Image 1 (cartoon, rainbow, N blue to C red):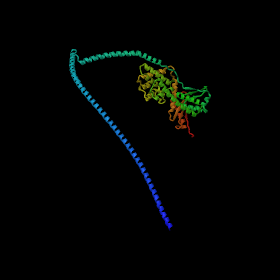
Image 2 (cartoon, rainbow, N blue to C red; image 1 turned 90 degrees about the vertical axis):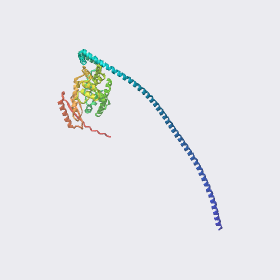
Image 3 (cartoon, rainbow, N blue to C red; image 1 turned 180 degrees about the vertical axis):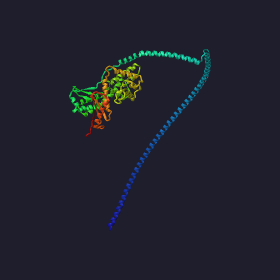
Image 4 (cartoon, helix red, strand yellow; image 1 turned 45 degrees about the horizontal axis):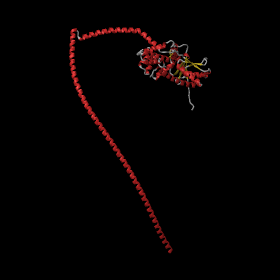
Length: 517
């Protein structure tokens, strides 16, 4: 029992001691936490105070800056107001000064007007006195002569008219007689001077071109297996290719020089490249056609530059270049037109007219021979229409249309163009009628076949003894091609004159093309 009491007492004493120790430790921790909190609070307080001071200083600086800017703006406004006030004061002073000057000038004008009025009154008074004296003088003259003033004036005018008519008739007769005596002489002088100042060449166009080759072995490659290459080349170019016994040469025959040039260039590229077959032939001919078209435009530009002619429409330049491949009665059309242009300029300068305008009309006078359309119109009228279409001046258009008297001459340039055209064409050896009629017959032959629907191309070959007609496979059947060949032959017999017989060959080709991808 005592032991239990002793243990209980020990336990109570131990608990009391433990509680005392724990309470003391708790108070120490509490004091430490409170101390740390106070220290942190002091730090935060100081930091906030510092931030508040910085914010205050910033706001103060911004406020001072704002105040300074406002003061500066107010100062500027005040300066502008002062300047405007000074300007208004200056204007007011200027207006006052001008007002005073105006008042002074008005006073001077009033004085001058009063002086003029007084002088005008004196002049009117003098005029009345002069009129009175004039009437008195006329009355005395009428009394002395026995005629009124109107009768005397009429007699004087009639006398002067008769005298003037007599003198004028005599003068006109004298001028006409002198003109008759000198006109022919002066005209010959102008023509001779013009011809002497222009040097020309004599050249006759041919209807064949010789294509030279290195060896006769190439002839076989050009002909191809069973003649397929030469047929493809003839069909693509419209030129008859003659391969005979002539050594190292192939003859290209066609009345159209453009076709012959295309065939010559195509043959040259094919022989140089070495690949000669129908597909390659069509490809090369297509490229050469574009090349020749570019050469035509370049020739037109070079011609206008050489002659000093500017401002031509691009289509007229192309037609001028195409003249290189046209002929007129065997005479190269471009050479003829250049010759006429130079003659026109020379003759116009001799006559005191505009040589540039005359040269322009001379170059374009045969432009109507180039297009293939509207063959029913005379070439002079067609050329005039083309010039009007491309905005050439009226006197140049009239000179083009009138150089063969299809239209009336309305400018001084027209007779000059007509005379110079005749001079160029009448030179010995300049033209050959047979060639022109031959080419015209072949052209008419092709145009006749082209007039049928479905016909795409026509080529007259073998000097007009064969006409090849190419039709579209989608526009005509095989049976219709036979009927077409008969119709063309019948119409040729009825409408055209030709030697021997003409073979009409209608070609209808069907192609199927696909691509492997």
